[in-house]
Image 1: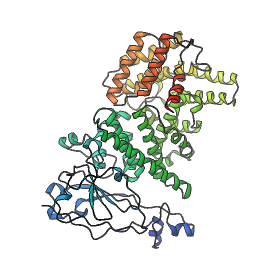
Image 2 (image 1 turned 180 degrees about the horizontal axis):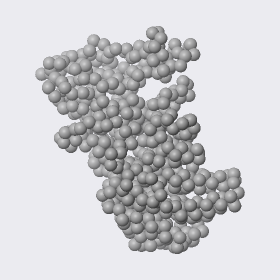
Image 3 (image 1 turned 90 degrees about the vertical axis):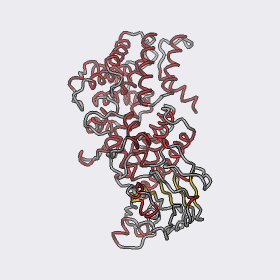
Image 4 (image 1 turned 180 degrees about the vertical axis):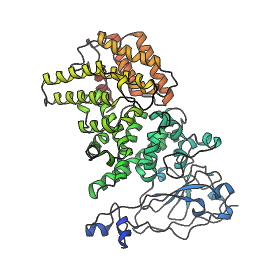
Length: 556
């Protein structure tokens, strides 16, 4: 029978960076310590809460551990302001607390005496006799009683190591055996990160390269990443249990709570560079979570709130002061802002300076994320900004018309062969051509989306060009899934039955390959096609933008 030997007491949380440097006593208050606050000093904050330790230090008797455990590594997540000790195990052979000869001793209280529940505590405990699975957290309560959270189905991956497939916090995953890969599924490393972006040749996947290190340093990114992964597994059918859905919700709530703490710290004492990146990454993951779940984001306010952060990064003097992670995150958020501007120019929030920064310094991120050339990205941003300015009468109608004329002329003569792409594959040019015509479709819908019918030859030319690009790409190509947005715009601007059928088939292929079901987009296209067929409103054209407003009204 295996015995669990309790620790004599838990070490106090480390002092803040400023007090450690000055060798002063620190009261460990958060977000800034009392000494720094009283003396007007800049509090450098506290070390990361997640440390990687050998299991021999995790209160397990060395001679009672199986050989497979004695050489493995586990993640010890110690919440410095909590009175519970949470240990996440991802190894087989976890000790059943009902078989231990000694009960786990109570955890030592922290110096502040405060107590805040860890997000893992939101999972209802089971009876002590429940056998723990590799992804169950053992919770040591202040009363010395051991409780096990509900055994989560392994694909939900509450075990951080199982989801992120990395035990050292690095951006590069370690090689794993075929058995362990099959067991965990590595849903983020092998599935979700590949669906979110393109990994071409020797280029690193930016989601793995930039978000994984942040997830190991900051609670908000970790929970947002775990929540998105669980949501994607549920919606893609890899784990259709309600437990997986509940896990997704729990992590999203925890991510929002941690995000609130970071934003509070930004107001009181300022943030370090990695903390700013953590905020950007958390919002990006939360918005992506909404897109995965419903296709309509309820975190548009957070996306808008990131504009000051992105503007501050864009204004930095010199490219060398912008980290690769910052530029990737700014590029991704700016693209999302541009997308919502397509449905209504009044929603566009980020400034032209931010878009110019992405064009000049984030071209690789744009290519890998969406396949849109930076020059086209920047030009359509000018059009949407002018449309917004015209709505609030910052520019006159003739000035707006001139912007539209210049943009259409630019897009019609733009040559995709003159662009420098990440690799030599011809699919980059096909993608660029699709985005060129997608932006032309949006430009031609200004200033009045009801005026030009979808049977107009110019509209049909761009629709056919996008569908031709789709026909030229292999279905198993990593480039093919980046055609979703151009295909959506082509489908929204056609009334031809065979074009509607082909567009639906292509979009279904992309849904299946990425695991993102995009229910809102599917509903919107169905509504547009039904209205074009039945003409219940008597419109000369059926603008898809009108149905976005109707969907948002119904969702409120």
